[in-house]
Image 1 (spheres, rainbow, N blue to C red):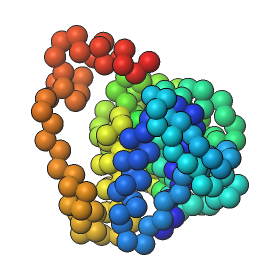
Image 2 (image 1 turned 45 degrees about the vertical axis):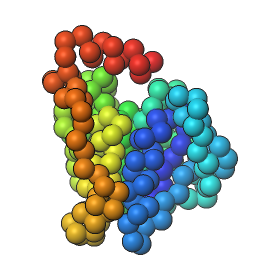
Image 3 (image 1 turned 90 degrees about the vertical axis):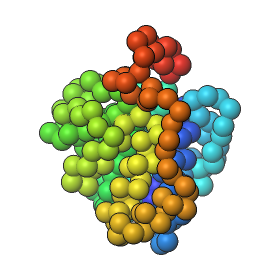
Image 4 (image 1 turned 60 degrees about the vertical axis):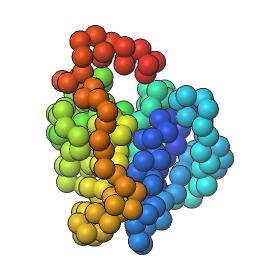
Length: 207
């Protein structure tokens, strides 16, 4: 199974690297970072660069597409090469997925009309602009479209895909191999549980 993860300027690193790690550990999976052109693409912190080893034209029909989000998503919505590649690839994929604000790019490609979808809590309402029904859940599966909430939820989404693609045992084996056993020190990972005033401080970190 060939998985393509498109990169664009100011993507969020964990959105791409989390699912990459899960899928790359799975037997029979190949993961390729793609971009408009082969070469380096820098994340939204400006301090980490990943290498796209293929262009969109090099890999038009992957089995799975996983679109990351990030601060650069809103600029990327106007990138016709990226949006058109997502739409074209989707016609041939087994699954088309997103992490965080990457779901907005699925919307821009016309893939969310009439579907439930999720994204980062800060922009969840924006999904309605694309005809989607915003859902505040960690991972949402609608047919072959799978959307994940913010950043770290991409790991959950990738494990979900593995379970659907093969079997639960394989997904569980990967989960154990990467020791994905979240035990956060705080209950501040959701606006529902975060202390008063913390969502505003978190939003300031995203800009």
